[in-house]
Image 1 (spheres, rainbow, N blue to C red):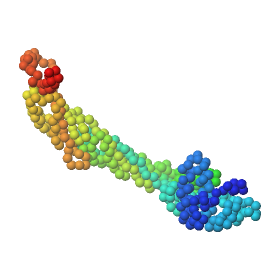
Image 2 (image 1 turned 120 degrees about the horizontal axis):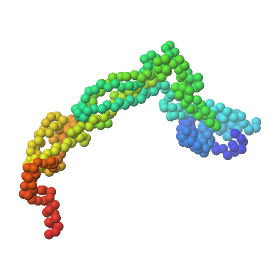
Image 3 (image 1 turned 30 degrees about the vertical axis):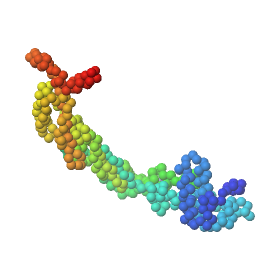
Image 4 (image 1 turned 180 degrees about the horizontal axis):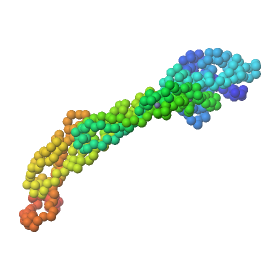
Length: 386
Ligand SMILES: [Zn+2]
Ligand SMILES: [Zn+2]
């Protein structure tokens, strides 16, 4: 810090936008707000913010210390310049900038709970505990199994807590030791110009501990691959991609962390006769031309046995008949969807000579009045040209 630089230095109280008689609490609040705003982690590659951050930090460090604050109030910036003996205050010679650890402690104090996820009292070590990952199991069902529900036993491969070391990762009789790199703090401090920045320790990944004698079975991983039988209860009415969650049946957690969840994801096979639309079922019923013309009663296979459908005289191809409640049960609800039967009139092919003669005779007797669609069109055309 040179004397010339100090000439342009802004007043510390002004910097923090507080009055000269601000309380410790007011100072802290003011600094916290500014430091959050200008913190280098939030303003990467922004030298202006870095300058502001440094200046505010310096101001706070001085004003939050009663002795330094008294000296500053009396001598101003000159209290910390380390200038000539006459000008030098009680902290001359770099009393402020000489010890970056001081600032680190302010950081621990101010940002501890914000940046380390709730660690208290300066303890900033990341927990070793790790939640197990969720596991997905794809289960293929027959169409009917999805409609009516099904109980199945599945075998899930997943990581389980190592039985040998009971999940510690350390060999029998050995415990993890404090990390030699960070001394068990879980974080390393780096000097970045004027202030120090804490980073997660790269050796222990922030856990603060090291396993020197790893368990032979899990190689220190605390978990081993295992197989588990799970009884799956598929409820009636599930469909393609329905997910059934089994809490805690996923991978085991690490070092005391909770287990993940198991998701059974359903794949439902197609049906040769029925198509699903939500909880409604659709199917196509082919009938002959005489059946459509004269009317008929047809037995149709539903999911729950035969049902009779009355096809009235003069039924057109494409007409739909709805059988209420003959569809798929609503999932986790009362009631069922409908079965929609679409009639399709088939034009005869490969007729015998007799059938052809009869068809010809029939054709000769047909008029436009026999055909509802043609009649409608015929009348429209008549209207237009009359
Ligand atoms: Zn083990
Ligand atoms: Zn470490």
